[in-house]
Image (cartoon, rainbow, N blue to C red):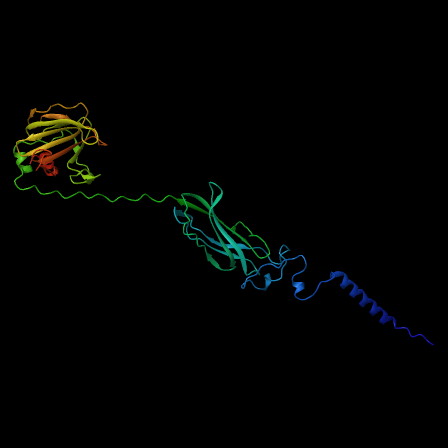
Amino acid sequence: MRTVRPPRVLLAVLACAAFGIAALLHAVPAGAAFGAAAANPPGGVRAPSDAGAGGSEYGVIAGGRPTTGRPVVVTLTVPAAAVAGAPPRVQLQINERGIGSVNARVAIVSLATNRPVVAVALGWVRTGRRLTVHWPHHARLAAGSYHVSVKARDAHGSPLLRRAHASGVATLNVSAPPPKSRPVPVAPAPAPIPAGVTTPAQTVADGAVFPVAGPHSFGGPENRFGAPRAGHIHQGQDVLTAEGTPVVAPLGGTVTSASFQSGGAGYYLVEHTGFGLDFMFAHCEAHSFAVGEGQAVTAGTTLCRAGQTGDATAPHLHIEVWVGTWHTAGAYPIDPLPYLEAWERGV
C-alpha cells in the first residue's frame, strides 16, 4: 500500500498554527477569562469614575501608567488684598485632556506658620469648568500674608502639574480692618437764660471780667455744658489754657469753699456773688489757692492757677454758673458759655 504524505505547504501551515496557540496559552495565565474579567485583571483595581468622567477613565488599573497627562490649574482668581474677616471669593478651573473629572482641594496657608488656616475639599469636580470655592461660614482670616493653594489628582492618581504660569498657588495679603469712626459729638444748643436771672449783658455792665487771664479756647462739643459723661452730664464749660495760667474772679463776692476732690474736681473754689449767681472753679493747680474760705473778693482778684488735678487729662479751668447757692435745694446750674463769651468780648 502506498503511503500518502501531506504536502509540505500544509505541514508548514499546521506548524505555524500550533506555535501560535502555544504562544497564546503561555501569554494568558491559567484561569484567566476574557470579557468583563479582562477589564479588571488580577492584582489590579479599576480606577473610580463618575457619571461625567467619560470612557477614558473606565477600566484603567490604579497605580498603572496613565494614558493621559496630569491636571493643570489654568485659572486661579484670588484678590491681591483683602480685609481681615471672612475669606475672599476664590475661583479656579482645572483642565486635563481626556479626563472628565479630578479630585480637588483648596487651602489657605499662613506664611507665618506654614500651616493651613482653612481648607475645603471640593471632591470630584468636572474639568474645563470655572468653580467657586464656598468657604465655611465660621472661617476667618487675621491680618497677615497667605498662599491660596490648589491640589488635585485624577483617577489615575496623577497629581497636579505645577508650571511657572499655572502653579495653582496665589498670594493673598490680608490687612486689619480700618478703625471704626466715632460719631462726631454735637454740641448741645445753649439754653436760654431763665427769666429773672441776671443776664450776661447785665454782668458786663456791672464790671465782670473773663476768668482766665491768658490765652485760651473753649474746646469742642465734649467741653460744652450738657455734654454726656459717665453716669451724668457736664455741668460746666471747659476753658482750655496752659498750666499755671491765673484764674480770677469774674465778679465781686465771697469765697464759700476751697477744697479738694480726688476723683472729680481736683482742687476747686466756690464763689457766692450778690447777683444771684454762684461760680465754681475746678481743676486748679495743686497748692495754688490765693484765697481762702470766707474771704471777700472783687472782679479780677486772683483765685488760683489753672491745672489738671482730679479727673482731668489736660490743663484747663472747669467753670460752673449756678442760679442760687451752689449745690443747695432749689439751686441749679446753667450754661456758662453765654456769660464767658460776653465777658471775653466785654459787651
